[in-house]
Image 1 (cartoon, rainbow, N blue to C red):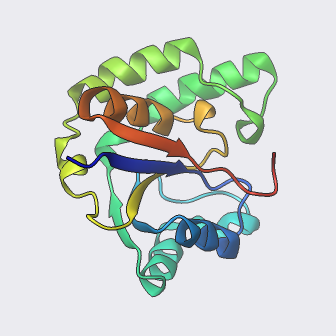
Image 2: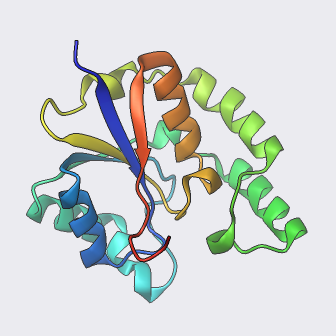
Image 3: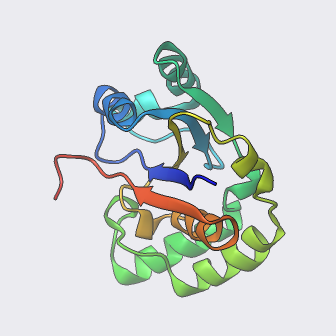
Length: 166
């Protein structure tokens, strides 16, 4: 049995062109969007808004699926924002998730989610990528989804980051 591999990637630190190039460099064939709201504030990230992103992915022959069942609720996001504010960090500079956010996301979202359908649609050639907003996976719920996939489905995970950052 061959091992199953999956990647994760965020919006921040990329522009539209470098994002697609990064996906193509590692042969991503399927992008799994785990955002609740599929838009990103700021003109530099307009490329990541759902319709534009899907059009660019289609042009690059990369399939797209939205998995809102894996997105944090608005209440959970607000909990994380409150912790960011308490620590004096902006969303774009966050380095890790709050412990309470991680606990609640795990019990309220991840423990209720069936990840088997995601594993079953992984491409036989190429790979798939979990996609959200934050640059660093440690600052994003996609790392929690990836960890669960690794633990329960023996999926090997690699986190992609922008190349211009060390």
